[in-house]
Length: 193
Image 1 (cartoon, rainbow, N blue to C red):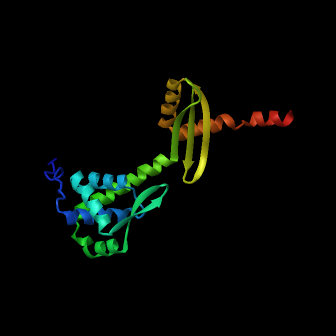
Image 2: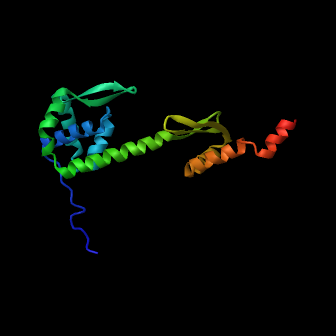
Image 3: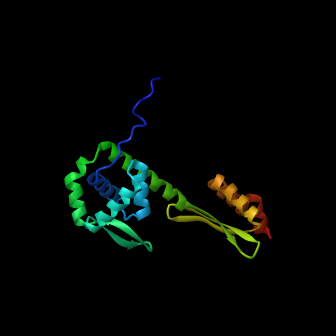
């Protein structure tokens, strides 16, 4: 099989206008307010832009009033302004198709990962000087399936419990349901008592 000689060739964004348009495109495509860290992650992951250039052009984009910060979820996040939306509408087709595609893929993958993280939370919480609990929360969409806190004793045990639960959270959930749900024989015994 012949190797594609172009697969490791990246287009380097050097032009400040191209970088600014890619920034505006990222904010628009995300379609929700995004943090500074998220924007930088998208741009650095999807393009080969210089970090210093990126930071200065983000600042310039804010100063030019093409983008502004809003307070959401207890932090500052970026959204497009009217002038930023209009600028992008006029020049979006000037952003290389490969850059647009790479940005879309990076943003989509990021939000899928964030959604998966939001579905499972496994924490180790100190209860005393040398004792810990293992706390787990499992969700399906917005519905909470499991919210459990278990005394683990040592930190090592709590970490082991977390690793074990994270390997197969739905399998562990099924086992917990199995333990908590009485069998037919146990139900009959409870009714007879």
